[in-house]
Length: 365
Image 1 (cartoon, rainbow, N blue to C red):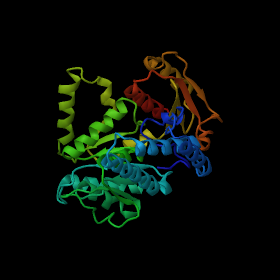
Image 2: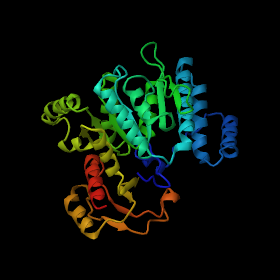
Image 3: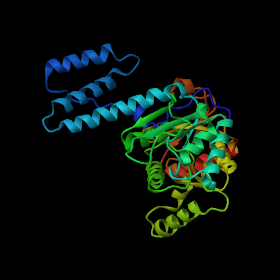
Image 4: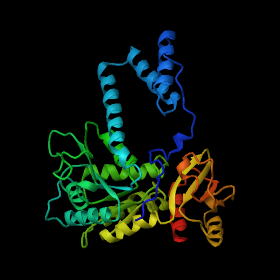
């Protein structure tokens, strides 16, 4: 894969919050403290939006002066913020390198077929220029890190009283971090990635997969490929898919198009091809209210545009799909302003259909 010079900010909530107005608290109720906080936010914000810094400072001091919070509540807030900051700091030097998060069981042994295919996939991903993010522990996580090697690996370990410890590939690496909270760890496993590959696993893997699908289904996470990878001859994910179709689709607890968010694979090569295809023409997208802008790495043909207008009219309520071949200087990320783009009013909530549209965009490449 040829990594673009610049990548769009990857985030939970599809980057939409970057275009929404920041809600500034009314203050702490203490005029002297409010004046100090306002001054600090303006003098020490660096290159950041001072209103964002003021929001942080006001929230912290409102929590500190609240009579309804216990010390333990404040400790949770402080630890959570610290973990989010340290993770962003660790990932920052590698922001413009695409990454793949790999999930799977910590209990998988080295002689298990899943271990070998995980190592093969990690090696293949690194060979194509991706970095690999795992939970940093043993089993499948270690296999993926072994395949990718320490140079291309991140480990987001969780501190537990049993079972979990940093695997030898990432232990001691400057790209390994120990998390105290599962929720800050899971946030970064998704926030920092461009694709997800899941191998057989237990409750933790199920939790991570269902949460990822839910975030995409509801538009709370940027769309990216989700691949469920079984070794040849194994049926773990095929049985899981049968359960989802029989118990969830059949009872209309989910929509049939929700299944387009998932790709089931039987080989490392197929999994890698699926991810590569996703980024063959599609680059990224962002929202401005109901208007979606989809950046592409090359223009889409007029024939393909007509096909999109016809077959995806259900997610284009105003029928206003347009292409801007020369980019847009008003792009919220100036480094990406020169990219071609598609723009239309989007039927919010139709994110599985948007995922299908991305495949159509890539078919035009």
